[in-house]
Image (cartoon, rainbow, N blue to C red; front, top):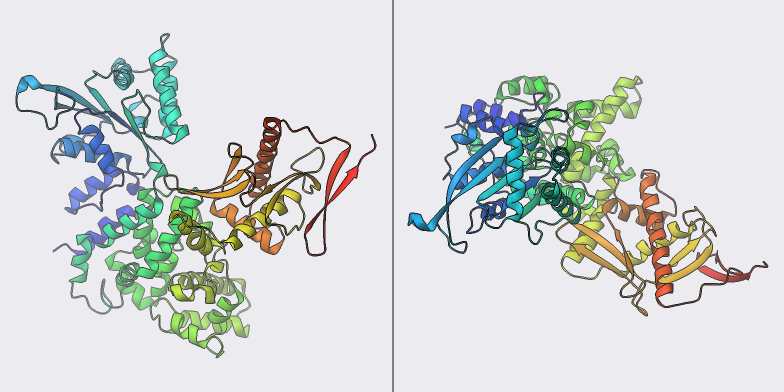
Length: 638
C-alpha cells in the first residue's frame, strides 16, 4: 500500500511550489518514477485526433501550440508511446529533438502495415517536442543539421510522396518567430514563406487544416477549460494515492484522521455542489476569453486540498497536521479559501494564471447586506439565525470556530480598535463569503443572491438563461434581449433612453464616439422586418456568443457578447450608469461596434442607391419623461 507521506509529497509537485517543478511534464514523470507513483493523467480531449493523424495509412505532420501547461509535451509523449507500444526509454532523453523509424504500408489506403517487406515503406517521425529549446536563440547561428531538418519539414508539408512526418510543439509566437528568423538566412525563401503563410492563416482563422497542406494544427489554448476541469478533477480524486490514505487507521489528530484538514478538503472536493460551482467559474472564464491551461487546473486542485498559510511552501505535508490541529488553525486550511489561492502571498497568487483569472470575479470581496448580516449578526438575530446555523455553526471545520466568534464579538462591540484586529476580521469575512459561495444550495441561489457574491451579478443568468438556451438551440427570453438592446441604445446615444425594439444609430454631428449623440442617423429593427433583425448565435467550437445586427440579409455586423460585455450592458440598462468596476475598454468596445454599424448603414444605402439625407435636415432625438425617444426634424439654414 502506498504510504501517505509519499503520496502527499508527490502531490505537492503539482502545487504552487517555488521551484516550479509543476511546469514541466518531464519533471513530473521523473518524480513519479522515483516515488513509484503513477502521475495524474487522463485522456486529453485532442489525444485521439493527434494520434490518429500520425498512426494512419497516410500520416500528416502535427503542430501543437498553446501556453505553458496546455499539454503539448504530454501529447507528444502519448504519440511516442502509441508508436513504441508504451516503451518510453528513448523518450526519457533530455534532447528536445527525437525521431523514430516506423513501418507504414506503401499503399496509402491500407492499414495496418502488411507483413510483406516489399509492400512496406519506412516513415521517419520527427519529434521537436520543445521548439524554444531546439531552435537557436535570436542572434545565434543555426546549426547545419537544424537548417536541413526545417527544410525537410517545409517540404513534407507540400510533398504528398514525402516519408517525413513532423510533430512540433511550441507556442504560436515561438513558431512564427522561429520561421521568420529561419527565412532571413536564405535567398530562395519561397518554400519557407509558403509554410509560414500557412501557419499564420491557420492561427488567424482558428482552423486545424488547410487544403493542399499535409498538416493538422492544434491550438490547445482554444481548449474548453470547463471540460478540462471535469476531466482533471475526476482523475485527481480517483488516483490510487488517495486509497492508501483512506485505508489508514490514523488517530484523531493525525494525518487523514477525522480532524485532518487534508482529509476534510478531499471529502469536500467530491461534493456535487463544489463541482457545479467550480465548473460554472471555468465556463465563465471560457466565455470571457480566459483559457486556463491543464497544469494550472491541477495546481489549483492540489492547492485546494493542501493549502495552509502557516506551513512550508504554504502546502501541508502529513507531519504538519498534528501541529495545525493543536494550534487551532485548521480553519486556515479551508478549501473555500484555497480554491482562490487565499493561502498564498498576494505576489505569488497574482503570478499564477488560474488565481489571477478567478480574482476577476472578486469572490469574497463582493457581498450583500443580507450575507454580511448573516455572518456578523446571525448568531443573535433571529432573522438570520437559521442560515447562520446551517452555513456556519454546523460546519465544524470551516464555519464559526472560536477564532471567528472572538473576532466577530470584538468587531461588534468595538473592543478591538487597532487596525490589525479589524483587518484580521475582514480577512475572516472574505474567507466565509467564499465559503457561502460554495455552500448555498442551487435551489436557494435567487433567495440569497448567490452571484451578487461576485462582481458579475448577472453571471448565473448568463449561463442558465442565455448560453445554455442558445447551446440547446432555444430562444432567449424577450426580457433579456430587450435589456441588452436598451443597454446598447444608452451607450450609443449617451442618454437614458428606454426604447428596446430598435437600435438607434446616432452621432453628435461630426464624431460618432462622442459621449452624447442626439442626431439620429438610422434605426434598426430588433425583430425581423424588411431584412433587419438582431440575432444571437452560439459558437460551439470557440465557446462564445455572437450578437449579429442585420441591416439586410447580406449586410450585418457581429459583436462578441462575452460575460463582461453582457454584465456591462445589463447594468447600464437596469441602473442607468456606467459601472465603475468595469474598465473603459468595455465602453469603447461598444462604441467601436456602433462605428462599424454606421459603416454598414452606409454600405446598405449605397447598395440600395438611396439618396443621402440633405445636410440641411437633421433628425434630433429627445426623450419623454418616460425615457421614450422622440424624433424632431430640424431644418438648418445654410
